Amino acid sequence: MAANQIDRQLIADLSDREEKLLEEQSPKSYEMFQRAIKHMPMGVASTYHARDPYPVYYTHGKGPHIWTVDGQEIADFHNGYGCMVQGHAHPLIVEAIQKRALLGTQFGLPTEDAIIMAEHLAGAFKLPQWRFVNSGSEAVMDAIRVARSFTGRDTVVKMFGSYHGHMDYVMVSIGAVDYGKIGPRDNYASLPYGGGIPQAAIDMTIPVPFNDLENMTKRIERLVDEGRAPACVIMEPAMMNLGVVLPEPGFLEGVRALTKKHGIVLIFDEVKTGICTARGGAVERWGVVPDMITLGKAIAGGTPCGAIGGSAEVMEKVNDGTVFQVGTYSGNPLSMAAARASFEQVMTDDAYKHLNHLNDRIIEGCDAVCKEHDFPAYTVGISSKGCVNFADGKITDYESFIKFQDHELVALAWLYNFNRGVVIAPGREEEWTLSITHTDADIDLYVSAFAELIRDVSA
Ligand SMILES: Cc1ncc(COP(=O)(O)O)c(C=O)c1O
Image 1 (tube, helix red, strand yellow):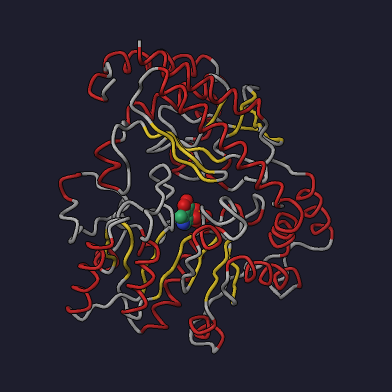
Image 2: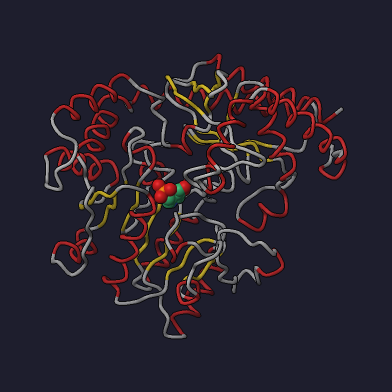
């Protein structure tokens, strides 16, 4: 079947049916939403938790499953946008947090666990110097500041379509509301992601295409010629917010050489790839070592934590007091204890082997379904991360994502999954994060929900 043969009316009808089913099963969530909107915009703590017409609210999680306020048990493939690769309430992480809580949770003074975590991260990610913060956004904000101080430059280069958190300089060209405004590949437009971003910040951030060294080089060389040489290139080594977009062979090496040539600090944002794809993230997987790394999400087993790694040269700007890299809760004992338990006892070699086994199974299962129905979709995955692209062309960057990804099917897939006891991250793609507590039965459930979807939309 070709993508243009998919019956749009059928998708609309199935979407209506599945939305109705969800609403019938979630009366308590609806009630909670009515209460929540009185004091919380959209009825949620973060816009990313919102859902139209109302969100589903949850009570608790254990291992690979979470429970809604209506008592539904759901296999969690969302996993907190990738924070919970360890699974929910992992006994070793709970124990570490409990022990630490009894000893005091926060001093605003240094403790040993932060030193131990810095040692672990230095070994895994091949960068010697580390600092801790509370989120991925904070890590990105501080990394960019260090890069600017180190280079004495202001311009930030990022990949069009990438998300790096909610601070002004990276809330640029994450998507295009009006796709016509994106511009040519060697001169992409700097577009704000939502309101409240100062024009000065937007203008300072220059987007380039992922997996396209030629056009990236052209843009950077033009910036150099214009006297606006970039302070940094910040990028996910594998993009993880357009589904999973892997780097084409040679791309990361090319970016490393290009940034070295122009004295640009290369920052790998491993907030999603770090920990979830290998203990040493993309650095371990692809062997390219940047000047700086940002971490967040899964690093501390579901407690708020971020980290910034850097070469000795770059981090000297923090060491010598030039850059104030600070924070009241930085390296807080609770997150550090959880991070240590995760790193030392939970995310073991066997845990990664199990993730690879599960990912192979989910990919094989979904691919077999697509093959059986001759359906225009394909899978991409590494370790705990993966996605189904509802696309009949290869997605390598934002432009191909917009061109090929079938967004109506993505939305329908979310509903199909939820109504069959599976939750995935909502958004622009069908993306999963596995946890080490998932079993083959969870994978079977996922694949069977996917099979039902593809069977129904192929009818
Ligand atoms: C690659 C990347 N960087 C940074 C962030 C920001 O992290 P946080 O939401 O913890 O601030 C995210 C969040 O999704 C991300 O995916």
